[in-house]
Length: 454
Ligand code: UD1
Ligand code: MG
Image (cartoon, rainbow, N blue to C red; front, side, top):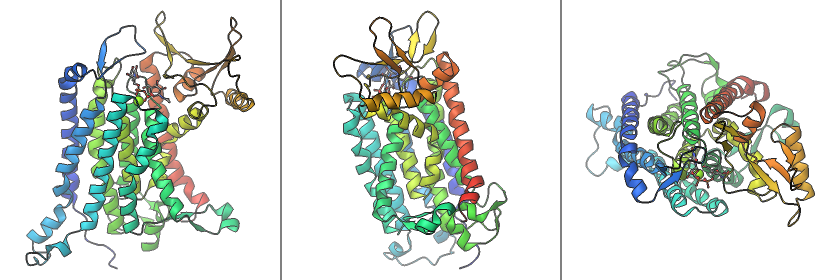
């Protein structure tokens, strides 16, 4: 195998950047333009954390998703521009009519199309959820089904199903475990997790959109590390994964020994999907920022979540991707007792708005003593969370009712840092997300060397 395969097309990356800018401008313009139409179609919501009662267009994630998916479809010829260039410049002998089929990278097209299919299903599910308020128990399995096209493509490529065992556990499991079908179960759950975890970390202006934006930017930064034209960092190759390690020993230096073309192409693919997503999210954040003039609805949460699952699976970095979801993982684990019915879960768990002070306070869920007293397990879980400082337990002096602050990261932030204004709380959430990403990069490229040897 030659040290340097021909490079994938750089012009495609430039085009993708152009598409991202267009996505940003289109979202910026279209969201307020179609707002009244959404309200007319009764797609509006009330801002729960404001003194006013106006109708704010909801499910505007549909506008974002439409722009995003249409642009991704328009981008297809650009993604394959190297094929056209090769023929045009005579690098490849132009095959006779009808034989072109054998030369065209159909595999890559199926990667792209299966990704679009998953995004479309996510859009549909999100929008239906906005319209019909599907119970979360019922909507959990749908992203699993939506991920099947991705899994089949992964399978067709004989994608890796091994996990590398950390050094301290090797005496027990050996250095590699082949999870086989279980790995596919894990990947399908990834899509359910990424879609729903953003949706349940929601309810304050800008929260859903900023999470998606930061995760997308983190994925982009991670992709750039693998491209030969970009950042010239000296990263020991084994930290970039076993494939790069096998092919080139020593230190990775951009543009010199960038690993296989396959690795570069996968991360290019991820960039094609992430750059326009950043454009859309940034454009939408402008309207969704405090005080929000537009709500994302479940549609935005589902589409962005699915986009992350898509790139994580197709570009083979699902475990790194999960590292960018640390706040969402925390929020999900914290939420479990409420999600699975151990502790009562009100329809909205967003913080409580106090009209007098204009501040947000942790919202509470009561545990009725009379009808269905909380189980021993519920009390134990609450005591552990409370000891860890995630929640505050109290007893209502009038009714004697045991109360807990709702089990979400937003309430936890308020418990830890005290009451805040909504725009301050969303900034706190943003800092948490950024800190999570910094931590993710440290773990992935710094600490991994201590636990794994490549
Ligand atoms: C999820 C959460 C719920 C949270 C809600 C807020 C779980 C299990 N579910 O439910 O606790 O209250 O998201 O989105 O954790 N809204 C605002 N300000 C915003 C964004 C939304 O007030 O910045 C309100 C609006 O009234 C909007 C509604 O939230 O209409 C949207 O809620 P929806 O997305 O339908 O809630 P779920 O996703 O079901
Ligand atoms: Mg929602």
